[in-house]
Each structure stands twice: as structure tokens, then as C-alpha cells.
Image (cartoon, rainbow, N blue to C red; front, top):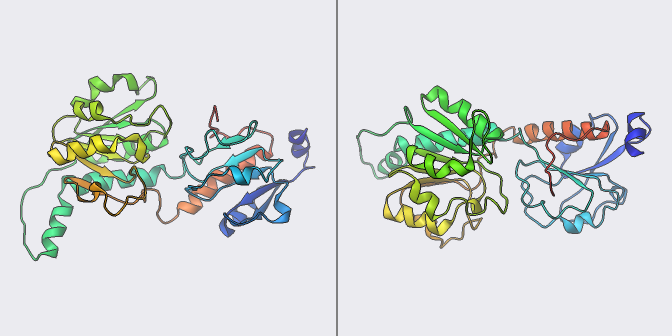
Length: 313
């Protein structure tokens, strides 16, 4: 009934948004009334009947306390592409939609930068600069490298498109095989053939420790593992063993645990390029996220299913 009434313009959806930019973005959507809330504080009185909740970007707290205050909740619209903090926690019958498409370009750009920094010895040259040494030497190059991208969604496609102008070749691996994409079951045969392996899978129980000791052992000597997904996709202890042996190198934007404790051995691991979960955190990320979120909420307000629904929540 609500969908029918919304279609005829008789119902206005209340959408809770965590910031002023969100209020502005959602106010442009027909049939929607955005209400500002402050994460971690009691909801305003006019928010209790909200049908849609937009959590803050990269929300790391358990959202179930908020859900309990929203008896009319029908949709949780995320500002992130990852949904692991919400899967299994949304109430029965409530839809969960991600922000797939908003951060893929930025994260792919980070992966390109990380690979170039490693191959061209930028960190080595920076240390030499700080020490006042003119450390002239030949470096490796991204050109002609074979890159395996595990995760064939928006992130994987965005990275593939950006790698090709660097004269590198990219091969995609998805959960199951399809045209132009290898299946995850083919990884044991694929891994030894590639110079770099980039992890862009969603975080699920199925992908937890996907990159384990066996996975890493199958990679070719001196290969680079790049994790732009979530920390627990990689077995940290297994990766540390490979880094400390000097056989593999790595670039991590995410870690397990996260944030990384000050005394964690990853800080001093050799052959590691490390950033603090910033691949998608760059100028314009809020605008890109709310453009996707507003479009998803607009579809819902018009009685349609959002395109980025997470199934089996």
C-alpha cells in the first residue's frame, strides 16, 4: 500500500541522514523528507517514523540499537560499497543497499599508485632523500606486468580499465566464472602466473582468510599482494611470514586488526606499502556517495527496488 500511495504522491518518505550534505542531497529527491540525525546521540523526535536510514560513511559501530528505535524502517542505504557491518544485523524484512559505484574509481586509483610506488622504488628513494643520499639505480616497472584482480565487480572493472593504459594486462576473477571472468575455483592454477594479485572481494564469511598460507604459497616469487578489500580477507600471520622471508611484497590499505596497534609487526615488515584505509577517502567522495544513495532512495520512493541490494541479509 505504501508503494502505491508513494507512486501517486500521497506519501512522503522520511530519510535519516548523518550530515548536512546528505540533507541537501536528499532534499532534491521527489517524495522524500530528509531528517538530520547525529550518530551516537538520541534520534530526534521527528525521526522515529523514518522508513529509510543512511548510516555515516564507514560506520563501524553495531547499528542494532538504532534499528530498535525505528519501527517503520524499510531500507538501510549505505554510503560505502562494503556491507559487512550490516549483513545479518538488519531487521527481518528491511532491505540493505550499498553504495556500489561511488568509490571504485578512487580505490582503483590507490591500487595503481601502490603498485607504481613499489615497482619504481618510490619509498626507497624517499628514504635516501631523507638521509641525503643520491641513490641512483634502475627500478622495476608496471609495464608488461600481469595483474590478477580477485573481485570482478565495480572495483575490479575500474582497476582493469586503469591498468591497461600502463601497458599492464589485467585478468578478472569472480565468485563464479562467466564470460571474461575466471571463477574463484581457478585460483590455484592462476596464481603462479601473475606478477601482482589485487584483492577487491566483498567481506563475507566465505572470503574471510581467502588469502591464507596456501594462497600466498601459490603466488610466484617476488609477486605483490594488494589488499584494497577488507583486512580479514587476508590471514595476517600468513602474510607476515611471507614478507619476513622476503619472498613476497605487499600493499595494504586495510589490516586485521584495524586500526593497527602501535606495536603490531606489520609496521616494520619488509616489502610492505601501508596506508590507513584511505583508498576511497579523497576529495569528492561524499558527493559521489550521495549521488548513488540519492538515486537508490529515489528508486525506492518510486516503488522500485534499489539496484545495489544485498541479498540474504
